Image 1: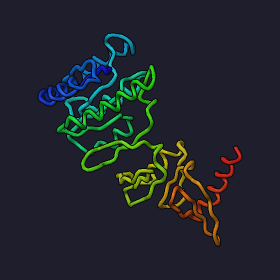
Image 2 (image 1 turned 90 degrees about the vertical axis):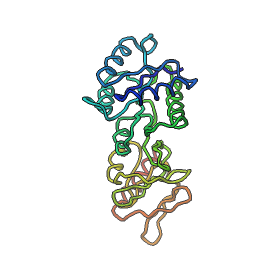
Image 3 (image 1 turned 45 degrees about the vertical axis):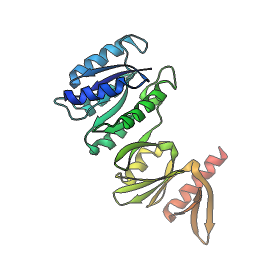
Image 4 (image 1 turned 30 degrees about the horizontal axis):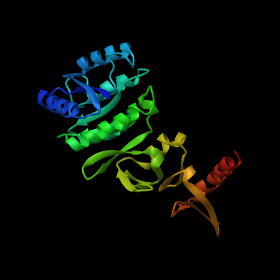
Length: 250
Protein backbone atom coordinates (compact mmCIF):
# COMPACT_ATOMS: atom_id res chain seq x y z
CA UNK A 1 0.00 0.00 0.00
CA UNK A 2 1.07 3.56 -0.66
CA UNK A 3 2.38 6.21 1.73
CA UNK A 4 1.29 9.56 0.34
CA UNK A 5 2.08 13.22 0.97
CA UNK A 6 -0.36 15.77 -0.52
CA UNK A 7 0.79 19.40 -0.86
CA UNK A 8 -1.54 22.37 -1.45
CA UNK A 9 -1.61 25.85 0.06
CA UNK A 10 -5.43 26.04 -0.20
CA UNK A 11 -6.87 24.28 2.83
CA UNK A 12 -10.23 23.25 1.26
CA UNK A 13 -8.47 21.77 -1.79
CA UNK A 14 -5.97 19.95 0.42
CA UNK A 15 -8.75 18.57 2.62
CA UNK A 16 -10.70 17.28 -0.38
CA UNK A 17 -7.60 15.69 -1.90
CA UNK A 18 -6.71 13.96 1.38
CA UNK A 19 -10.29 12.72 1.75
CA UNK A 20 -10.23 11.13 -1.70
CA UNK A 21 -6.77 9.63 -1.20
CA UNK A 22 -7.64 8.11 2.17
CA UNK A 23 -10.73 6.53 0.65
CA UNK A 24 -8.62 4.64 -1.90
CA UNK A 25 -7.86 1.08 -0.67
CA UNK A 26 -4.36 1.25 -2.21
CA UNK A 27 -3.36 4.13 0.11
CA UNK A 28 -1.99 3.19 3.52
CA UNK A 29 -1.42 6.72 4.83
CA UNK A 30 -2.05 10.20 3.40
CA UNK A 31 -0.51 13.24 5.08
CA UNK A 32 -0.92 16.89 4.15
CA UNK A 33 1.42 19.89 3.87
CA UNK A 34 0.28 23.46 3.31
CA UNK A 35 3.36 24.79 1.51
CA UNK A 36 6.56 23.75 -0.22
CA UNK A 37 8.78 24.34 2.82
CA UNK A 38 6.73 22.04 5.03
CA UNK A 39 6.63 19.46 2.25
CA UNK A 40 10.41 19.49 1.76
CA UNK A 41 10.96 19.21 5.49
CA UNK A 42 8.67 16.16 5.63
CA UNK A 43 10.26 14.59 2.54
CA UNK A 44 13.71 15.17 4.05
CA UNK A 45 12.74 13.13 7.12
CA UNK A 46 11.43 10.41 4.82
CA UNK A 47 14.64 10.26 2.81
CA UNK A 48 16.71 10.05 5.99
CA UNK A 49 14.55 7.18 7.21
CA UNK A 50 15.00 5.21 3.99
CA UNK A 51 12.41 3.38 1.87
CA UNK A 52 11.41 0.99 4.65
CA UNK A 53 11.31 3.44 7.55
CA UNK A 54 8.15 4.59 9.29
CA UNK A 55 8.65 8.10 7.88
CA UNK A 56 8.94 6.89 4.28
CA UNK A 57 6.86 8.45 1.47
CA UNK A 58 6.15 6.69 -1.82
CA UNK A 59 4.56 9.56 -3.74
CA UNK A 60 3.93 13.30 -3.46
CA UNK A 61 0.74 14.81 -4.92
CA UNK A 62 1.86 18.37 -5.67
CA UNK A 63 -0.07 21.55 -6.39
CA UNK A 64 1.85 23.80 -8.79
CA UNK A 65 0.89 27.37 -7.83
CA UNK A 66 1.93 27.99 -4.22
CA UNK A 67 3.52 31.00 -2.51
CA UNK A 68 7.30 30.86 -2.40
CA UNK A 69 8.51 27.67 -4.05
CA UNK A 70 6.12 26.23 -6.63
CA UNK A 71 5.33 22.56 -7.09
CA UNK A 72 7.64 22.55 -10.11
CA UNK A 73 10.45 23.91 -7.91
CA UNK A 74 9.84 21.14 -5.39
CA UNK A 75 9.94 18.49 -8.12
CA UNK A 76 13.23 19.89 -9.47
CA UNK A 77 14.76 19.76 -6.00
CA UNK A 78 13.56 16.18 -5.50
CA UNK A 79 15.11 15.15 -8.81
CA UNK A 80 18.53 15.87 -7.29
CA UNK A 81 18.13 13.17 -4.62
CA UNK A 82 19.24 9.58 -5.15
CA UNK A 83 15.92 8.00 -4.11
CA UNK A 84 13.16 10.61 -4.21
CA UNK A 85 9.44 9.78 -4.03
CA UNK A 86 7.36 9.68 -7.19
CA UNK A 87 5.52 12.87 -8.16
CA UNK A 88 1.96 13.50 -9.35
CA UNK A 89 0.99 17.09 -10.14
CA UNK A 90 -2.49 18.27 -9.15
CA UNK A 91 -3.29 21.67 -10.63
CA UNK A 92 -5.99 23.87 -12.10
CA UNK A 93 -3.68 24.88 -14.95
CA UNK A 94 -3.19 22.87 -18.15
CA UNK A 95 -0.16 24.83 -19.35
CA UNK A 96 2.48 23.05 -17.25
CA UNK A 97 2.07 19.55 -18.69
CA UNK A 98 5.28 19.83 -20.73
CA UNK A 99 7.30 20.79 -17.64
CA UNK A 100 5.74 17.81 -15.86
CA UNK A 101 6.90 15.60 -18.73
CA UNK A 102 10.44 16.98 -18.38
CA UNK A 103 10.41 16.31 -14.62
CA UNK A 104 9.35 12.65 -15.05
CA UNK A 105 6.01 13.11 -13.30
CA UNK A 106 3.92 9.97 -13.11
CA UNK A 107 0.69 11.84 -13.83
CA UNK A 108 -0.88 15.30 -14.19
CA UNK A 109 -4.35 15.66 -12.64
CA UNK A 110 -6.47 18.73 -13.31
CA UNK A 111 -8.63 20.46 -10.72
CA UNK A 112 -11.39 20.14 -9.78
CA UNK A 113 -10.21 16.64 -8.95
CA UNK A 114 -12.60 13.87 -9.94
CA UNK A 115 -12.57 10.67 -7.90
CA UNK A 116 -12.20 8.48 -11.00
CA UNK A 117 -9.31 10.54 -12.38
CA UNK A 118 -7.47 10.51 -9.06
CA UNK A 119 -7.99 6.75 -8.80
CA UNK A 120 -6.28 6.37 -12.18
CA UNK A 121 -3.29 8.36 -10.93
CA UNK A 122 -3.12 6.23 -7.77
CA UNK A 123 -3.24 3.10 -9.92
CA UNK A 124 -0.27 4.31 -11.99
CA UNK A 125 1.74 5.05 -8.86
CA UNK A 126 0.79 1.75 -7.22
CA UNK A 127 1.98 -0.21 -10.27
CA UNK A 128 5.32 1.62 -10.33
CA UNK A 129 5.95 1.31 -6.60
CA UNK A 130 5.25 -2.41 -6.60
CA UNK A 131 7.04 -3.14 -9.88
CA UNK A 132 10.39 -3.29 -8.05
CA UNK A 133 11.48 -3.50 -4.46
CA UNK A 134 13.14 -0.09 -4.64
CA UNK A 135 11.43 2.10 -7.23
CA UNK A 136 12.74 5.47 -8.34
CA UNK A 137 11.25 7.83 -10.94
CA UNK A 138 14.03 7.08 -13.43
CA UNK A 139 12.92 3.43 -13.47
CA UNK A 140 9.55 4.45 -14.89
CA UNK A 141 9.15 4.37 -18.68
CA UNK A 142 9.47 7.84 -20.18
CA UNK A 143 6.07 9.34 -20.91
CA UNK A 144 4.66 12.36 -22.70
CA UNK A 145 1.48 14.23 -21.70
CA UNK A 146 -1.40 14.32 -24.18
CA UNK A 147 -4.86 15.89 -23.97
CA UNK A 148 -7.83 13.56 -24.37
CA UNK A 149 -11.25 15.12 -23.96
CA UNK A 150 -9.97 17.81 -21.62
CA UNK A 151 -8.04 15.29 -19.48
CA UNK A 152 -4.24 15.11 -19.46
CA UNK A 153 -2.94 11.57 -19.78
CA UNK A 154 0.52 10.18 -20.39
CA UNK A 155 1.63 8.05 -23.36
CA UNK A 156 4.75 5.91 -23.02
CA UNK A 157 7.44 6.95 -25.50
CA UNK A 158 8.13 3.26 -26.17
CA UNK A 159 4.58 2.96 -27.57
CA UNK A 160 5.18 5.61 -30.25
CA UNK A 161 5.97 4.30 -33.76
CA UNK A 162 6.48 7.62 -35.52
CA UNK A 163 5.82 11.34 -35.14
CA UNK A 164 4.41 13.69 -37.76
CA UNK A 165 5.07 17.44 -37.80
CA UNK A 166 2.15 19.88 -37.69
CA UNK A 167 3.77 23.32 -37.47
CA UNK A 168 4.52 23.98 -33.79
CA UNK A 169 2.64 20.78 -32.95
CA UNK A 170 3.47 17.11 -33.44
CA UNK A 171 1.17 14.13 -33.92
CA UNK A 172 2.27 10.99 -32.08
CA UNK A 173 1.28 7.76 -33.81
CA UNK A 174 0.94 4.61 -31.68
CA UNK A 175 -0.54 1.18 -32.35
CA UNK A 176 -3.79 2.35 -30.76
CA UNK A 177 -4.28 5.79 -32.30
CA UNK A 178 -2.68 9.21 -32.55
CA UNK A 179 -2.33 12.22 -30.26
CA UNK A 180 -1.59 15.86 -31.05
CA UNK A 181 0.83 17.61 -28.69
CA UNK A 182 2.12 21.18 -28.64
CA UNK A 183 5.79 20.30 -29.05
CA UNK A 184 7.84 20.98 -32.24
CA UNK A 185 9.21 17.93 -34.03
CA UNK A 186 12.75 19.34 -33.68
CA UNK A 187 12.41 19.30 -29.88
CA UNK A 188 11.33 15.65 -29.85
CA UNK A 189 14.14 14.76 -32.27
CA UNK A 190 16.70 16.17 -29.85
CA UNK A 191 15.16 14.61 -26.74
CA UNK A 192 14.62 11.16 -28.20
CA UNK A 193 17.82 10.68 -30.19
CA UNK A 194 19.16 8.29 -27.55
CA UNK A 195 15.86 6.37 -27.54
CA UNK A 196 16.24 5.21 -31.15
CA UNK A 197 14.24 7.90 -32.95
CA UNK A 198 15.65 9.28 -36.20
CA UNK A 199 14.57 12.05 -38.56
CA UNK A 200 13.76 10.64 -42.01
CA UNK A 201 12.05 13.72 -43.44
CA UNK A 202 11.32 17.30 -42.40
CA UNK A 203 7.85 16.02 -41.48
CA UNK A 204 8.61 12.68 -39.82
CA UNK A 205 10.52 11.23 -36.89
CA UNK A 206 10.55 7.41 -36.69
CA UNK A 207 11.42 4.80 -34.07
CA UNK A 208 14.14 2.69 -35.70
CA UNK A 209 12.92 -0.59 -34.23
CA UNK A 210 9.48 0.03 -35.79
CA UNK A 211 10.85 0.15 -39.36
CA UNK A 212 9.83 -3.11 -41.08
CA UNK A 213 10.98 -2.36 -44.63
CA UNK A 214 13.25 0.06 -46.48
CA UNK A 215 12.16 0.53 -50.09
CA UNK A 216 13.99 2.02 -53.10
CA UNK A 217 11.78 2.83 -56.08
CA UNK A 218 13.05 4.89 -59.01
CA UNK A 219 15.41 6.87 -56.84
CA UNK A 220 12.80 7.49 -54.13
CA UNK A 221 13.23 5.99 -50.69
CA UNK A 222 10.49 5.06 -48.23
CA UNK A 223 10.05 2.98 -45.10
CA UNK A 224 7.18 0.79 -43.93
CA UNK A 225 6.10 1.36 -40.31
CA UNK A 226 3.25 -0.97 -39.48
CA UNK A 227 0.66 -0.39 -42.20
CA UNK A 228 2.03 3.06 -43.11
CA UNK A 229 4.54 3.99 -45.81
CA UNK A 230 6.61 7.10 -45.05
CA UNK A 231 8.78 8.97 -47.53
CA UNK A 232 12.47 9.41 -46.75
CA UNK A 233 14.03 12.64 -48.01
CA UNK A 234 17.17 12.53 -50.16
CA UNK A 235 19.10 14.22 -47.38
CA UNK A 236 18.24 11.48 -44.89
CA UNK A 237 18.17 8.44 -47.21
CA UNK A 238 21.84 7.42 -47.13
CA UNK A 239 22.38 8.01 -43.35
CA UNK A 240 19.23 5.99 -42.66
CA UNK A 241 20.32 3.10 -44.92
CA UNK A 242 23.74 3.05 -43.29
CA UNK A 243 22.23 3.11 -39.82
CA UNK A 244 19.84 0.26 -40.57
CA UNK A 245 22.62 -1.82 -42.11
CA UNK A 246 24.83 -1.31 -39.04
CA UNK A 247 21.99 -2.33 -36.76
CA UNK A 248 21.28 -5.42 -38.85
CA UNK A 249 24.95 -6.36 -38.89
CA UNK A 250 25.34 -5.82 -35.15
